[in-house]
Image: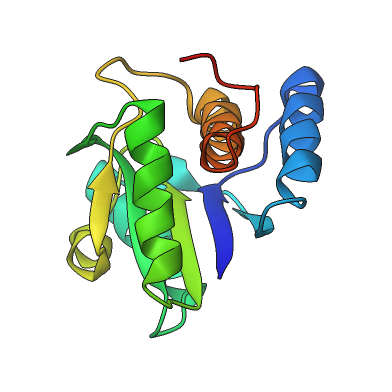
Length: 157
């Protein structure tokens, strides 16, 4: 199985980029992982929130194949402890799917079309974080999940 993280817009904080890169390197010992940036939409000042979500939604959907399992990182999604998330990852790996795609949406969330295509929604917290911070938090939790599955000492129970 491959895990892919899709995100709208680049990360412009060099420290965050460096930390994300560190976790990406660590993840390659456990699973094939890719992090793909979908460029920001140009001329958003002329668009309302719905129009922006629809344009971003089309870009997200264009980066998926029909067999991908799509998980939205959404504030209204299911919450997990780190241990429960690792078990959830294991279930996906055992299911025989080819690619598991996690998506971080734009500033206004996801279009209806993306919500309808999604197989599930996960919330990292009830709090709101910047989309750039979520990239780091998610890659760290993904790494943590794999260390839990391998009974490695990174996660303290």
